[in-house]
Length: 222
Ligand code: PMT
Image 1 (cartoon, rainbow, N blue to C red):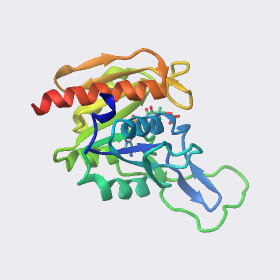
Image 2: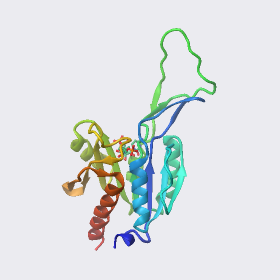
Image 3: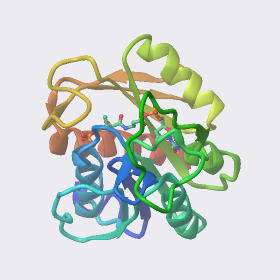
Image 4: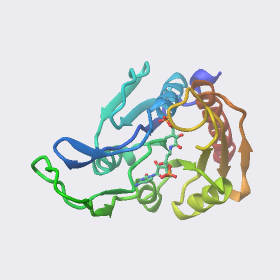
């Protein structure tokens, strides 16, 4: 039964946005609500996994059976993920991690001045890529939020980040991607594997995604 498919396994899920501080009262972020990641964590726990949810700032309740670690920035998320990585079996990176952060963080609130202003940004660490480079036996699952050429970018990410699966959503589609209660995705895997899912609630989709992946990995193991 689906209840036991992940019994004895440790699953890390990341969810939500990150916040990259500009000054004590301002930050850069994105529209991730955490709904997709929280649904993934809830589904993993239902299937019997020890589930660690590493979450950026969102306002969602912790799903039943899930241990949540709250983080703020991409750097905090990296630290939290790394602390659990070696002991994990599946890592699911649903979080929308900032690719850039302000190069310096002002320690006082920045004041208005005449004319424009410029914030200099620097790259954050790509957590998924880092995990891909240090992969042992973990099954590494990334998400990809794209506005165009979804399949091509998803396949690129699979290769470049050494992931086992990329779950791609076209975030321009109504009722899919950021903030909505529903999503529509295509899963890409090794050896050209590709499977499209219908539009459905993020909870239903999370269960179906984990059913698919655990089935494929079972075949893999035997
Ligand atoms: O939270 P919701 O409102 O429910 O929205 C869900 C979602 C749209 C955020 C989710 O379904 C989704 O697509 N998450 C990934 C969003 C994203 O940041 O995609 P990306 O293409 O920029 O990144 C690709 C992968 O690399 C992701 O697994 C991401 O977690 C990871 N990444 C990216 C940048 C970075 N610095 N470190 C990372 O690990």
